[in-house]
Image (tube, rainbow, N blue to C red; front, side, top):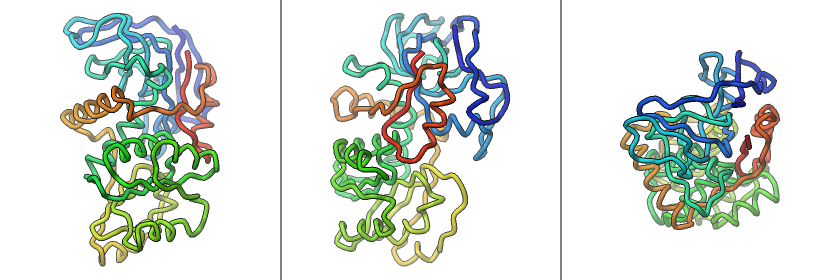
Amino acid sequence: MKAIRVHEHGGPEVLRLEELRDPQPQAGQVVVQVRAAGVNPIDTYIRAGIHGYSATFPYTPGLDAAGIVESVGQEVTNVSVGARVYCAGTLSGAYAEKVVCHGLQIHPLPERLSFAQGACIAVPYGAAYRALFQRARSEPAETVLIHGASGGVGLAATQLARAAGLRVIGTAGTDQGRRLVLENGAHFVLDHHDPGHLERVVELTDDRGVDVILEMLANVNLGRDLPALAGGGRVVVVGCRGNVEINPRDTMPRETCILGMSLGNARERQVRSIHAALAAGLESGTLNPVVGREFPLGEAAQAHRASMEPGSYGNIVLIP
């Protein structure tokens, strides 16, 4: 089979298409024929060895995939050969024609969704759900501000928040992105390049402030987020690419707080809760992954470059 391999930390050019032996499942494992693999920012951090991420070389990148079950090992009882599935994590790396997963990493993919959409579920929707409900503990009727709402996690959060009865304000950097955010359920959308957009956020809440902010680029926005919070408000840091200076006093009058979030910290019980909630939304149609761009597997380097460009629009996937 063909797979992308990385032999050293570096830029996108270290992603190489190579030929590997077809994998065989061990006990408790599943082999999936990959029809699409998701490209997430964390993939680029691991490849580059930045923001605290590293890898054991050589390795195949990728956490998210969707495809058809080719074979199952002993002790696997939750899935059978031929099933359409999405993978929430892998053992061998998703940027490949075939991937090995633990049986518990496999989830059914509804017939109404394409494989490309299936490759956009686990990390984007998992991160959005954990940020909204497991960290911020958002409740119906609260107002949430989603920075960078036109990206993969932002759109997932927009759909999840709207379905849960929250009032949703999104931001995006392009006209196309703002239209997309509105189409996916936001009540209001603002241009985050506008220096006064956070003041406009406060105006939209009758000067009360927002209850929850999902922050995709904390190194740019966090210091300005804090004054936009309502009493008891919470900022969840979903993404950050550098340092930022804040005034801690901005948290004191309204007793607000800053929460970190990492999907990898979710306990087994929390992971089950996430995917049970996602399954319900995917089956009912309230959750609809948005594919922004598709690249052939051999163009993984171009996909990594695209994933870090400003003006995000949906998810990026690789097609073997």
